Length: 297
Image (tube, rainbow, N blue to C red):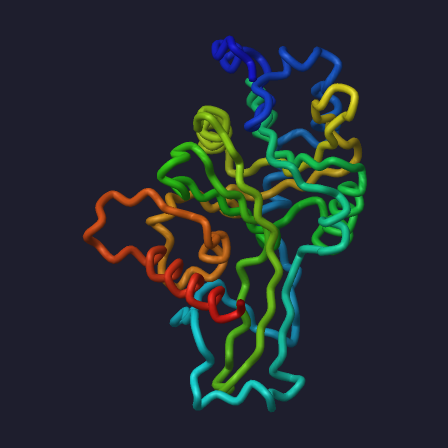
């Protein structure tokens, strides 16, 4: 960890729970040209491209981002999941499990550049360069501008009382298919989680505060160099994303029917609560998840 916290206020800030600034990592770690090509700077044309798209997602499925009710527990007796027709089975995922397992996601890095043409950067840090294939797939399927927020990112703080600065990152899709009056449908979505074992919120808050100044950010990937244990940005793969594709909240603020964020809560979490009296949805979900885990043993 960098001892001089003032380094965070200098020209570059490249940080996660393992490292704090580019100054500490060496001047050749990355450069402006590696973060953004000269032709892809944040300008009016790029902003118009990002916020106005006529491309449809899936013609045969109506997607939504909300559920009427989220239930954890045993399957209700009146529902027969054994005879669900093929047309009522949906899978929606932006996560290639095989690639993510081989890439070795280790955390996040944040880059903030004090020039108005450069919005902030969020980089997923991996242990192998297989991560480039993850981004190649995303770019092939979604494009270099994620105009529909297909890649959703959640940052949940306050997940453990004994580790107040730890936070969880979830990456995946928050879409759910509309039932269209069908009695029963099956839906599967895959997400990836990572717990950032931070010693403060300074790094992530630096990124989030910078993000308030821009409607977009750049999503990139980096690989940890074995010889230095420091990340190196991967060239040629970057996705411009809207600010709306990142959800930031405290664990106790997660809404009871928010399937995406509730998926980020794990069995060993002990959320920080403003008080112990109110029945926060995260408490109920944790109880149900733990009951289900015991039944599976």
